Amino acid sequence: EDQVTQSPEALRLQEGESSSLNCSYTVSGLRGLFWYRQDPGKGPEFLFTLYSAGEEKEKERLKATLTKKESFLHITAPKPEDSATYLCAVLLIQGAQKLVFGQGTRLTINP
Amino acid sequence: DVKVTQSSRYLVKRTGEKVFLECVQDMDHENMFWYRQDPGLGLRLIYFSYDVKMKEKGDIPEGYSVSREKKERFSLILESASTNQTSMYLCASSFDLRSNIQYFGAGTRLSVL
Image (cartoon, rainbow over all chains, first blue to last red; front, side, top):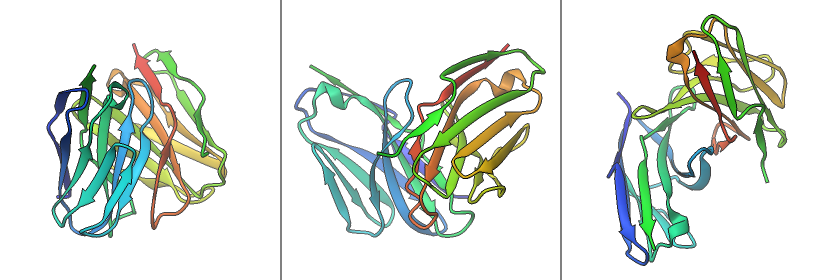
Protein backbone atom coordinates (compact mmCIF):
# COMPACT_ATOMS: atom_id res chain seq x y z
CA GLU A 1 0.00 0.00 0.00
CA ASP A 2 1.28 3.46 -0.88
CA GLN A 3 2.10 5.39 2.25
CA VAL A 4 3.47 8.79 3.20
CA THR A 5 4.62 9.47 6.75
CA GLN A 6 5.66 12.83 8.14
CA SER A 7 7.63 13.42 11.31
CA PRO A 8 7.49 14.92 13.79
CA GLU A 9 3.75 15.56 14.14
CA ALA A 10 4.50 18.86 15.83
CA LEU A 11 7.65 20.92 16.29
CA ARG A 12 8.18 23.98 18.40
CA LEU A 13 11.30 26.13 17.77
CA GLN A 14 12.67 29.42 18.92
CA GLU A 15 13.06 32.15 16.34
CA GLY A 16 16.38 31.60 14.55
CA GLU A 17 16.65 27.92 15.54
CA SER A 18 17.12 25.88 12.36
CA SER A 19 15.64 22.40 11.96
CA SER A 20 14.30 19.87 9.46
CA LEU A 21 10.98 18.20 8.80
CA ASN A 22 10.89 14.69 7.41
CA CYS A 23 8.65 13.02 4.83
CA SER A 24 9.26 9.33 4.20
CA TYR A 25 7.37 7.38 1.58
CA THR A 26 6.73 3.82 0.54
CA VAL A 27 5.15 3.87 -2.89
CA SER A 28 5.02 1.70 -5.96
CA GLY A 29 6.49 4.37 -8.21
CA LEU A 30 7.22 8.04 -7.59
CA ARG A 31 6.60 10.66 -10.25
CA GLY A 32 7.08 13.63 -7.94
CA LEU A 33 7.04 14.85 -4.36
CA PHE A 34 5.28 18.03 -3.29
CA TRP A 35 5.54 20.29 -0.26
CA TYR A 36 2.66 22.53 0.76
CA ARG A 37 2.19 25.04 3.56
CA GLN A 38 -1.20 25.33 5.28
CA ASP A 39 -2.18 28.14 7.62
CA PRO A 40 -5.06 27.65 10.08
CA GLY A 41 -8.46 27.88 8.38
CA LYS A 42 -6.95 28.09 4.89
CA GLY A 43 -6.24 25.78 1.99
CA PRO A 44 -2.76 24.37 1.33
CA GLU A 45 -0.35 26.65 -0.54
CA PHE A 46 2.09 25.08 -3.01
CA LEU A 47 5.78 25.42 -2.12
CA PHE A 48 7.91 22.96 -4.10
CA THR A 49 7.93 19.96 -6.40
CA LEU A 50 10.88 17.54 -6.54
CA TYR A 51 11.11 14.93 -9.27
CA SER A 52 14.35 12.99 -8.80
CA ALA A 53 16.70 11.88 -6.05
CA GLY A 54 19.36 14.49 -5.37
CA GLU A 55 17.18 17.38 -6.45
CA GLU A 56 16.97 20.45 -4.21
CA LYS A 57 14.70 23.51 -4.28
CA GLU A 58 14.93 26.69 -2.21
CA LYS A 59 12.57 29.48 -1.32
CA GLU A 60 13.56 32.10 1.24
CA ARG A 61 14.31 30.22 4.49
CA LEU A 62 13.08 26.87 3.16
CA LYS A 63 15.03 24.21 1.30
CA ALA A 64 13.56 20.90 0.16
CA THR A 65 15.67 17.85 -0.68
CA LEU A 66 14.78 14.42 -2.04
CA THR A 67 16.30 10.96 -1.72
CA LYS A 68 14.93 7.62 -2.94
CA LYS A 69 13.05 7.05 0.31
CA GLU A 70 12.44 10.43 1.88
CA SER A 71 12.36 14.18 1.59
CA PHE A 72 13.46 16.84 4.03
CA LEU A 73 12.22 20.38 4.42
CA HIS A 74 15.03 22.37 6.01
CA ILE A 75 14.11 25.60 7.74
CA THR A 76 17.00 27.98 8.31
CA ALA A 77 16.77 30.76 10.92
CA PRO A 78 12.96 30.61 11.02
CA LYS A 79 10.72 33.54 11.91
CA PRO A 80 7.33 33.46 13.65
CA GLU A 81 5.60 33.93 10.27
CA ASP A 82 6.93 30.52 9.23
CA SER A 83 4.55 28.95 11.74
CA ALA A 84 2.13 26.70 9.82
CA THR A 85 1.38 23.07 9.05
CA TYR A 86 3.65 21.67 6.34
CA LEU A 87 2.21 18.93 4.16
CA CYS A 88 4.09 16.47 2.01
CA ALA A 89 2.42 14.64 -0.90
CA VAL A 90 3.61 12.15 -3.50
CA LEU A 91 2.45 11.84 -7.08
CA LEU A 92 2.39 8.23 -8.19
CA ILE A 93 3.42 6.96 -11.59
CA GLN A 94 0.49 4.62 -11.76
CA GLY A 95 -3.11 5.00 -10.71
CA ALA A 96 -5.11 8.02 -11.69
CA GLN A 97 -2.35 10.56 -11.19
CA LYS A 98 -3.50 11.36 -7.70
CA LEU A 99 -1.59 12.92 -4.82
CA VAL A 100 -1.15 10.88 -1.65
CA PHE A 101 -0.74 13.21 1.33
CA GLY A 102 1.04 12.76 4.62
CA GLN A 103 -0.64 13.97 7.77
CA GLY A 104 1.51 17.06 8.13
CA THR A 105 3.92 18.61 10.62
CA ARG A 106 2.60 21.48 12.70
CA LEU A 107 5.46 23.97 13.10
CA THR A 108 5.42 26.73 15.71
CA ILE A 109 8.13 29.38 15.85
CA ASN A 110 8.27 31.31 19.11
CA PRO A 111 9.62 34.89 19.07
CA ASP B 1 -1.93 34.05 -9.70
CA VAL B 2 -4.18 31.03 -9.77
CA LYS B 3 -7.41 31.60 -7.97
CA VAL B 4 -9.62 28.77 -6.75
CA THR B 5 -12.78 30.05 -5.11
CA GLN B 6 -15.10 28.00 -2.92
CA SER B 7 -18.55 29.47 -2.55
CA SER B 8 -18.89 29.13 1.21
CA ARG B 9 -16.35 29.25 4.05
CA TYR B 10 -18.76 27.83 6.63
CA LEU B 11 -21.92 25.80 6.17
CA VAL B 12 -24.33 24.23 8.66
CA LYS B 13 -26.80 21.64 7.39
CA ARG B 14 -29.17 19.09 8.86
CA THR B 15 -28.99 15.33 8.50
CA GLY B 16 -30.69 14.19 5.31
CA GLU B 17 -30.37 17.49 3.47
CA LYS B 18 -28.93 17.61 -0.04
CA VAL B 19 -25.82 19.81 0.04
CA PHE B 20 -24.02 21.51 -2.83
CA LEU B 21 -20.43 22.74 -2.51
CA GLU B 22 -19.28 24.89 -5.39
CA CYS B 23 -15.77 25.55 -6.66
CA VAL B 24 -14.62 27.85 -9.45
CA GLN B 25 -11.11 28.30 -10.89
CA ASP B 26 -10.01 31.12 -13.13
CA MET B 27 -6.89 29.67 -14.80
CA ASP B 28 -8.42 27.45 -17.46
CA HIS B 29 -7.12 24.34 -15.68
CA GLU B 30 -8.12 20.97 -17.09
CA ASN B 31 -8.23 19.09 -13.81
CA MET B 32 -10.20 19.69 -10.65
CA PHE B 33 -10.30 17.80 -7.37
CA TRP B 34 -12.36 17.52 -4.20
CA TYR B 35 -10.76 16.48 -0.90
CA ARG B 36 -11.88 16.28 2.67
CA GLN B 37 -9.51 17.00 5.52
CA ASP B 38 -10.00 15.52 8.97
CA PRO B 39 -7.72 15.63 12.03
CA GLY B 40 -5.46 12.60 12.13
CA LEU B 41 -6.51 11.45 8.65
CA GLY B 42 -5.00 14.15 6.46
CA LEU B 43 -6.36 15.01 3.02
CA ARG B 44 -8.34 12.30 1.28
CA LEU B 45 -9.44 12.46 -2.34
CA ILE B 46 -13.18 12.19 -2.92
CA TYR B 47 -13.51 12.74 -6.67
CA PHE B 48 -11.63 14.37 -9.47
CA SER B 49 -12.33 15.48 -13.02
CA TYR B 50 -9.89 15.72 -15.91
CA ASP B 51 -12.31 17.23 -18.42
CA VAL B 52 -15.77 18.69 -18.69
CA LYS B 53 -18.41 16.06 -17.92
CA MET B 54 -15.69 13.56 -16.98
CA LYS B 55 -15.20 12.32 -13.42
CA GLU B 56 -13.22 9.70 -11.58
CA LYS B 57 -13.71 8.29 -8.09
CA GLY B 58 -11.06 8.98 -5.54
CA ASP B 59 -10.42 7.06 -2.33
CA ILE B 60 -13.65 7.88 -0.49
CA PRO B 61 -16.47 8.56 -2.99
CA GLU B 62 -19.28 6.91 -1.01
CA GLY B 63 -22.08 9.33 -0.17
CA TYR B 64 -20.84 11.94 -2.64
CA SER B 65 -21.32 12.81 -6.28
CA VAL B 66 -19.88 15.53 -8.50
CA SER B 67 -20.82 17.63 -11.47
CA ARG B 68 -18.65 19.41 -14.01
CA GLU B 69 -20.78 21.08 -16.65
CA LYS B 70 -18.27 23.84 -17.39
CA LYS B 71 -14.48 23.76 -17.35
CA GLU B 72 -14.12 26.33 -14.60
CA ARG B 73 -16.70 24.91 -12.19
CA PHE B 74 -16.68 21.67 -10.18
CA SER B 75 -19.47 20.90 -7.73
CA LEU B 76 -19.50 18.39 -4.90
CA ILE B 77 -22.91 17.04 -3.93
CA LEU B 78 -23.81 15.32 -0.70
CA GLU B 79 -26.95 13.44 -1.67
CA SER B 80 -28.21 12.99 1.88
CA ALA B 81 -25.92 14.61 4.43
CA SER B 82 -24.90 12.60 7.46
CA THR B 83 -23.06 13.62 10.62
CA ASN B 84 -19.94 11.69 9.56
CA GLN B 85 -19.63 14.07 6.62
CA THR B 86 -18.86 16.94 8.97
CA SER B 87 -15.43 18.00 7.76
CA MET B 88 -13.30 20.60 5.98
CA TYR B 89 -13.78 20.29 2.22
CA LEU B 90 -11.04 21.49 -0.10
CA CYS B 91 -11.22 22.03 -3.84
CA ALA B 92 -8.10 22.11 -6.02
CA SER B 93 -7.22 22.50 -9.67
CA SER B 94 -4.18 21.68 -11.81
CA PHE B 95 -3.09 22.50 -15.33
CA ASP B 96 -2.00 19.00 -16.30
CA LEU B 97 -1.90 15.56 -14.73
CA ARG B 98 1.76 14.93 -15.57
CA SER B 99 3.14 17.51 -13.16
CA ASN B 100 -0.14 17.80 -11.24
CA ILE B 101 0.76 20.88 -9.24
CA GLN B 102 -2.52 21.45 -7.46
CA TYR B 103 -3.75 24.84 -6.30
CA PHE B 104 -6.24 24.86 -3.48
CA GLY B 105 -9.18 26.96 -2.46
CA ALA B 106 -9.63 28.28 1.08
CA GLY B 107 -11.92 25.41 2.05
CA THR B 108 -15.50 24.99 3.24
CA ARG B 109 -16.04 23.89 6.82
CA LEU B 110 -19.25 21.87 6.78
CA SER B 111 -21.11 20.90 9.92
CA VAL B 112 -23.96 18.39 9.64
CA LEU B 113 -26.23 18.39 12.67
